[in-house]
Length: 320
Image 1 (cartoon, rainbow, N blue to C red):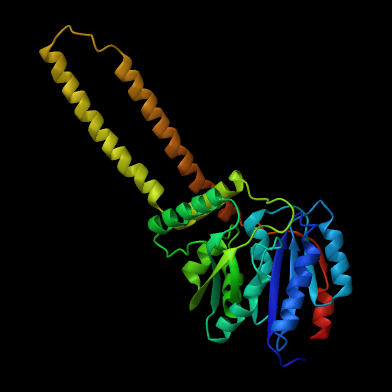
Image 2: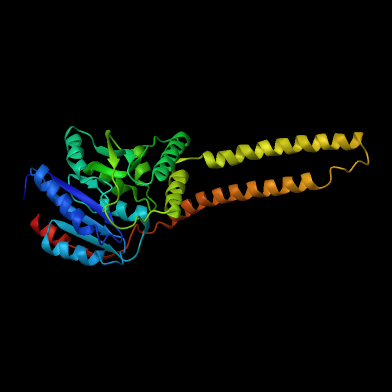
């Protein structure tokens, strides 16, 4: 059994047929060249790719027993699958990195150096991006808004790219959260932390799987998990509207007493008020529904993912 410390590199992927082998080779070469004093394993978790990614992963696992793979039976979403992958690692620390090269592999030695300094968590924080500038700006606004509204500290421009000590990985295992949001969990429960800035490069190949719906899903998960401001706004707004409505009704009643028989105002103000309040009610009912769906997912306590196949896990345990 080796006395070297072991580093796990966890790579989630979905339809990354053009990137799977290049990211494996880049991580392998980086580890062998820059961190030869460590043992390492590379763990891919595939979220039910349909483009040939799985065949590539099987080939890599056949060539290199340091590479493991978990193949999911279906797509379990952008949060559950990477989180589950972290839980399956066996290293003294775990580095998470995306398969599309937007998380630079050159950052791994910097993460490990900070970890050796005693930091339990090392976060890669984007200072700029070569991707869509509008998307980067909107993400920045979102992070700032969540940070302002949340009672828990939030990390701006942190996507999950970073290093986690095995003690924190064990904390994640004990959470048993069926709807995990790793960015919030790191800020809420993580120990000593260091943030390292980097510029996000362009995606190497293929198309991004993030769209407005997935970004909205991420925003709602963080919003319902770490803020109460939505429900409180609804409460305060309800009190304010009730008070203003009562005042308007009182003034209108006084006006009618003073101008008895004057109906010139018509029904337009009433209709506008009804439609306005209807829209506000629908907005807050939808917001309340987001909280209820979040609670419902946690109460059902379904598994994070369901595996179809594991590759090289037995070989790894035999070596140990």
